[in-house]
Amino acid sequence: MPELPEITLFRNYVRETSLKKTIKKIDFPESSLLQAPAEDFKNELIGKKFQAAERLGKYLVITTTGSPSLIFHFGMTGKLEYYSNQDPPKYSKMILYFEDDYRLAFTCRRKLGKIYLTEDLESFKKENELGPDALEISEKEFLNLLEEKTGAIKAVLTDQHVISGIGNVYSDEMLYQCKIHPKTKTSEISASDKKKLYKKMKHVLEMAIDKEGVRKDFPKTWMIQHRKDGADCSKCDGKVKKIKVGGRSTYFCPTCQKEEG
Image (cartoon, rainbow, N blue to C red; front, side, top):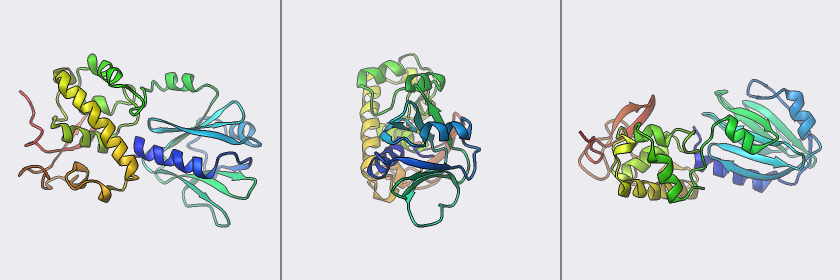
């Protein structure tokens, strides 16, 4: 599933291709992802321009010259494709036509994404109980968010109600670099380790943005390069192990990331 770094890339893509262009037409090859009637999207967006694109955790928010904002959640396989003079991309769910004859398509092969219209972003955040964006919070805010949490740290990091934007891949990387077992109770992590986790969260997400999410380009010592059950750990003689934490597939090194108790 696209996580915060991938949403950042989609945000940049929209900024580079689709802002300040008048929307003349919208097609919905399949409307199952729409969180409002198709006619509402057409009435609110046709004749308007995209004004800005922003990231909110795993959501992409596109404001317009009208009152509503268009919001995409990418599910497991959502993508954006800007194009002209060709057939619509496969698995297109929404196609926006601009006056210069370019188009922006939202594709989603596994149909797990969602497309929203919202008049008020703050209300949208509250309705979806979204925590703050992981790259927008201070260390103090991060520590406060973890303060009363007692569940497994992996589950807390990937809970979008707590912090928005972190998923399986990057949470595993953060914990691996901090040598924290993914099942460790959040309340049992020391203040110094929580501060280290905050710094690694920032570092991992910023590195992922810089590498544009291309896994082979990450440092060879990172878990992301060895994310397979039974793979050699890059830091010790141990083997990577796959387990479930909070229902999520989780990769870690039992030798480096010892379970306490």
